[in-house]
Amino acid sequence: MPIDITMPALSPTMEEGKLAKWHVKEGDSVSSGDVIAEIETDKATMEVEAVDEGKIGKIMVAEGTDNVKVNAVIAVLLQEGEDASAIGAGGSKPAEAPKAEAKTEAPKGDAGTLQYDKGTSTTSTAPVANSNTGSSAPNAAAPAPAKSEGGRVFASPLAKRLAKEAGIDLASVAGSGPKGRVIKADVEAAKSGKGAAKPAASAPAAAAAPATGMSKNQVMALFEEGTYEVVPNDGMRKVVAARLTESKQTVPHFYLTLDCKIDALMAAREQINAAAPKGKDGKPGYKLSVNDFVMKAWAIALQRVPAANATWAGDSILYHKRSDVAVAVSVPGGLFTPVVKSADTKTLREISEEVKDLASRAKSKKLAPHEYQGGSSSVSNLGMFGIKHFAAVINPPHGTILAVGAGEERVYPENGQIKIGQFMTVTLSCDHRAVDGALGAELLGVFKGLIENPVMMLA
Image 1 (cartoon, rainbow, N blue to C red):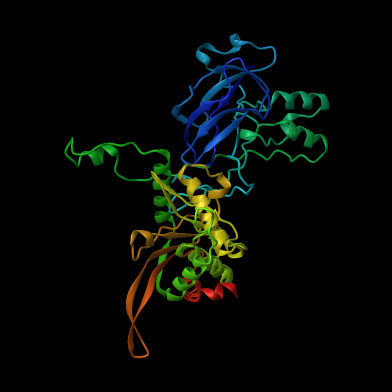
Image 2: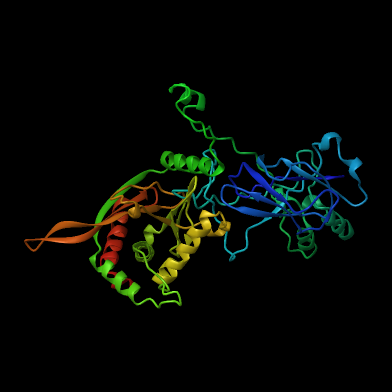
């Protein structure tokens, strides 16, 4: 029986995407692992791989089509011995037909653990992580059971053949493929006795109530027709809106503000940059920014106050061993928060180069999921725009986010004298469920000590 290839969910919160490019055409033969298409989401462009072998019988969604819903049929795969006549009228498939959801591969990059993407809907009931932004994501949902409602087992043709040869009941095998589909590796694991038993199907969780607010028509009715232009929100803007609404509605924020004297930091930065080797073009080999020092100091502070390096996880709190710090990056139409892993162990120069690389690829949506998912805290710096002070929205499930303002000269008293120095205002937003007031104050105090005396970052 022909198999539907459906639009894959590239993250737990993806609802639709763009079918950017087909790498195959009708009549082409494919094997498991062959790249058949490219899908664009609000975050990145992903390659889609075939999980079954066969021949492309019909392409249902044209190249370049936007807003293709997750699980919509994008192509039909014919198995051995079948031809196009096996495809139902109009290309539709019987409801009971097994669905081979395409496997996706992240853009080439370093391997990493997928923890959470930056986009979670307000109806999600699982813990999530995001960006202020837009960077980190909810933990991937557990695979769906391989049995359909009608009792049919979802399995690839190869898995069925191997199971039959080995005398294995597919109904007893836990599938690790898309939608819990049983694949070759599952059957081989079952043959060796290492396969996991299929978990009992659980009742679907009740859908959460949708976010409340004025509809588009209600908003438009408040303004005179012709005085505005309607621009539909793209995927990224929808994700940012949903995540920030969720954060402010569900995370009990509180804020702590300090002024940091940065004369020593600016002097150290100038000295380090002056020592940078020059290339053949006369340009310095590196140039550290104030934000590089902020990232380093914040990562060390999280290590020195480990109780504040925390994530709220419902009935538990996760205390992170590493300082994986996300940095907010503005991109057209929204925000990304790529993560600098183990930032406390990296030099200022390494942090500088990594942030520049991540920010550059974020703007062109070339980041792999593991590069913008995860992290335990964030830094959002608007100082380059002249903003003196602001409070950032926490990126769930991060426990904190540090908002950094512009450095400026200010008058201050010292030993009965009036002096002038450079100061920077920072505001720490905390999730009160995981980080209490005194703990947040301790964390911010350690950061202040490091940023005012940057040599202490070496201790």
